[in-house]
Length: 114
Image 1 (cartoon, rainbow, N blue to C red):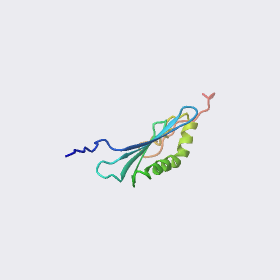
Image 2 (image 1 turned 180 degrees about the vertical axis):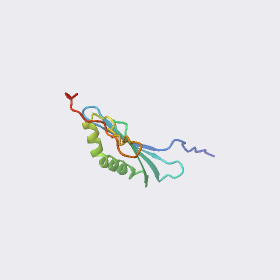
Image 3 (image 1 turned 90 degrees about the horizontal axis):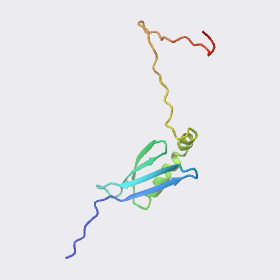
Image 4 (image 1 turned 45 degrees about the horizontal axis):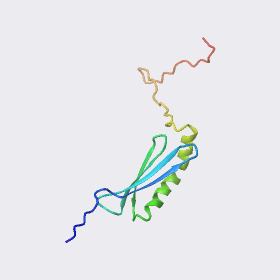
């Protein structure tokens, strides 16, 4: 009698896109352990941005799903590259409010004014 053991490590597919300046994006698909046709997708940008997704299909078509993720995020990647792959600037929408609820704005002065 021959014993056959199934591997406990899930199947994984990786696409690495590397540019001439050394920037790289990594698209990864990891097969779910409970369902061989379910794949967990992730895409990592050089800025640290991570995009997650799921795909249901066989191993032959999961590479197409990874390629589609790369294509869908191409504009975001180009915007990040223009910023030097720094995270996006977040605008602070907080406003100072007085006791009666009115907005309080500080005086706006130019550089040379006193």
